[in-house]
Image 1 (tube, rainbow, N blue to C red):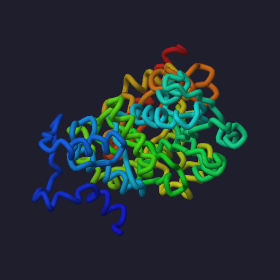
Image 2: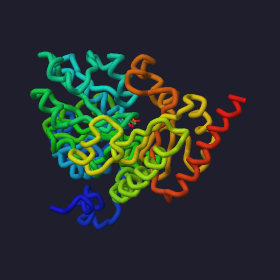
Image 3: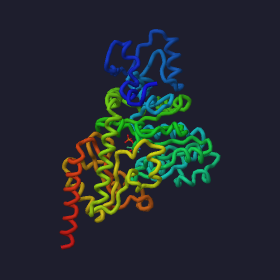
Image 4: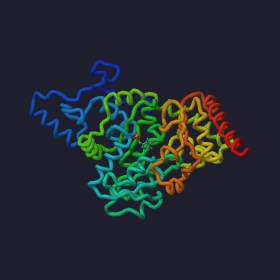
Length: 397
Ligand SMILES: *Cc1c(COP(=O)(O)O)cnc(C)c1O
């Protein structure tokens, strides 16, 4: 079997040689001719029933070959039989909830997690009752109607790590979904530890260039079928142009993550020594919950750094204003560095009490470190921190 660094370049491209092309073709058809009605009916039934492909794609909500290629690539990278791609990470999570609803109405969710995931679950919009627990409470809170356990590791925004193996064990056969967006398949393969669903917001590192919104769920084929059925029924499709861009970015995934990870560790160390910074959260510094898992369950500490400014919200606002090279924006995993303020942006939808309980303080900033030269990134961050402290000095005067 090829190694990861080879798969990341070649996966999902198996049919290209036979097609006589080098780059994946983009199929934009919304519908496909059906001259043989019997065969068309069989294809229709197969696709609506959740099969990955059929002789005739019939209609683009049922199947698209450009999307199927990137799905195959991501299944290979996660070591799962299948992958189902959606219009966004949130569409992917919604589909899993809808598919699991048939197995019971209760879902256990380990906080903290991505703000909108938290909001979707807490709102009960998908007809599931979400109970928020700590990882060590999973076994005790399981009910006969518990249909899913959800964990996110590394977690957003504090980069706490959750032991996937332990969560699977505690779930006692209830399927575990791991949101592995922050890790990417370069650093972590949750299915190897027993996770049934591996979810990525492919908008982040997998896309990698800030120009694609997408979500994927990697899982066994048996679990993928209901997801395809939900996708066909609800229409949360990944557009083939977006699928092409996603696939286009994958060959550099390992290189991007390795470089950004080295930069992130360097930035984390410098932040830890900076007088304007009260705390730094980075698995590589050992300053997050279960940090040791970044060596056992992961193959590195990742590309994100969170830090708390000593001067709280005003200092965070000053940093957002002052950065020049680093983009002050939500999202993460792009080739360029991004910085944002979770309490004011991504985690607005989480109640103030829950923000407080999970370390989302007024001075907390989250940075997704890019692949630029680290000295240029640090120079920009350092001048922004200096402006933040001059705001404080002005306020004090
Ligand atoms: C961004 C993100 C999501 C949601 O993905 P979208 O593609 O924005 O819908 C879910 N989980 C995590 C960890 C994320 O970072």
